[in-house]
Length: 354
Image 1 (tube, rainbow, N blue to C red):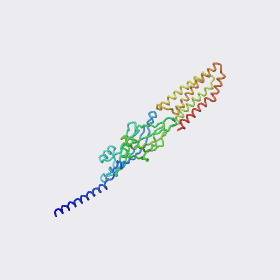
Image 2 (tube, helix red, strand yellow):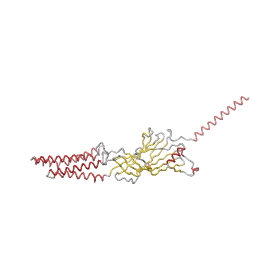
Image 3 (cartoon, rainbow, N blue to C red):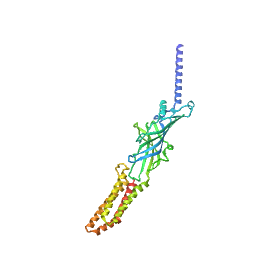
Image 4 (tube, rainbow, N blue to C red):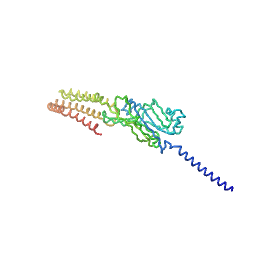
């Protein structure tokens, strides 16, 4: 009888223990959701990039300065709080305080770097707001210098350049995923840049190798820049046209020695032009459109001096009629058609061919 009672008590205890364990497991399963920031459920972060000012464009150093407003948004249930207990729906933090708060709760704070940053980033203002459901909005306004390695000057000064502002996640893509905030991205209305016409902003999302050495998400603001051509027409092309006209007018002088002196002066002017233009550009391994035109003008002016020297030699040797025929042929055909061919070839090779 005693043995039977002991067996009954053991069976009842096992049943109660099994029931209690099953109830506890169900309670945990229903009370805790999947954690964010894991390969199964990466933290989704929205990134907005708005450039309010472009402070400078240094094409020789291939970089530009900007004043930028960065915005990041994400939701993490681990950061949620009781609004009745706190007494408000939204809490405002400075960024270090939010990071400490999230670290204390075991939550992930998405970190990022500016991929093409070249200088220190001077933060003017920054703040973060936390809503009771765990939604976070982080905003900062800063100024910095950014690399522009995609500059291509082959069509200079008719070139269109690409500018980028690249934000890359510190965490691999399997833990933190970026997506663009189109509404909070773009260019400001008053950029303060007079030399360039900046437009066509667009937000691009991609995957790059991050600081961890693994694939990380990147959101970039890309935009285009074109030059104000009025400046180059007045300061460069109009003086070049005047020099070409002066070179052509030399053929109407009967004194070949005077022609040589004036052509030599034009040659020095072209040298000065070349130095002035090259001072604004890096030391390129290729010719730009303007370089090609200038070098051809330089060679044509040099050839003009040699041609006039040859004509004077013919005149001195008593073959003045032959010199006049060559001179007349150069006035009507060689000089004007030569420059027309140079300009047409430059336009085709540099501006029309992709």
